[in-house]
Length: 404
Image (cartoon, rainbow, N blue to C red; front, side, top):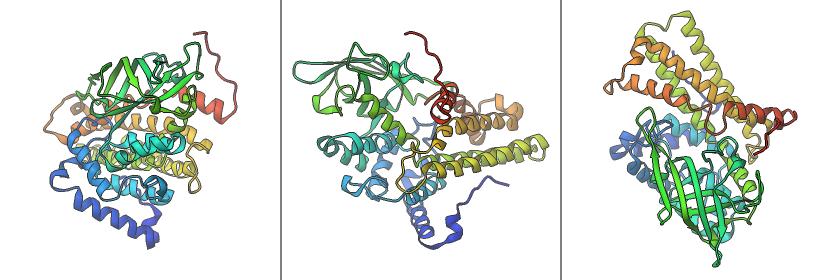
């Protein structure tokens, strides 16, 4: 009994199967030696594992030609189809590929610069992202602007020399302590409100006026941070688009966040469900009708996720934001994952209450439970997701908002 979901490519054979074999063989050969300890590490809840070695792994991937797969050839990428990118993400996850230190740069900022940046910005930043030598973090959320991102209060003031002074605070900034750059959504028009008057800046972290404070989590890790700006500087050529154009650019970037890598995320979920099934068998509860029913629902949920993700991606080259099916994705997977974490604890029974670092399987399942508590909060709470589905998907009236 396991949660494996095979794609039809294995059955169809042909070029797709050969590509899977090529990727799997490369992963087997390279995710070894010094990199062997990275297998299945560095995912959500474990992102502070082996940061230096995972940066070296990014360089290894780049040397093998496995970065920028979906980027256009003229931007330095490989111009792969959606179908081929899906194959890579699935085989990468299947082989135990570690969480990507370069995901924010390669998956989010790079495509955004290709879509919205100028030639100078693409020339300065894309090569380092592709080479796995430049690492980025995201400066969106603030203490008063999480799910309500339009409430950003970090300020950007234009200086006499054309540069910008940045003052404010960002929070939940994943891997900021291991990054060189941060892209920042800031309010450049002090008289503006909501999503008007915002601008999108590329800001170096190693400068006076920037302080990074790690946030310690309940599982002991500190993968995300608070970032404080007190007179930090963004050069004039590091403003993406025009002043006041930040909301459009920020939304463009978020569209890439729900792109093809979601299929790789699902492969991690499959592994976690396999761990739950193994633990249920070892604990002697695999034949319990209620446990079996919950495992079956979890497996069925994975199938729903896969087919909705494929529908969401749509025709080759289509944006993941063009189909309304994309609106349900975050709500669905986050609640599914939270329920899987609870199932893991119920399978472990009393043993779930005891921490023992020597028991790797128990520790993994405890990690799934603890981190999945946050899934329905970050990147838009359940309530925000339901509003998005109602308003953008169903055309219902917007929820009344109070005066700020």
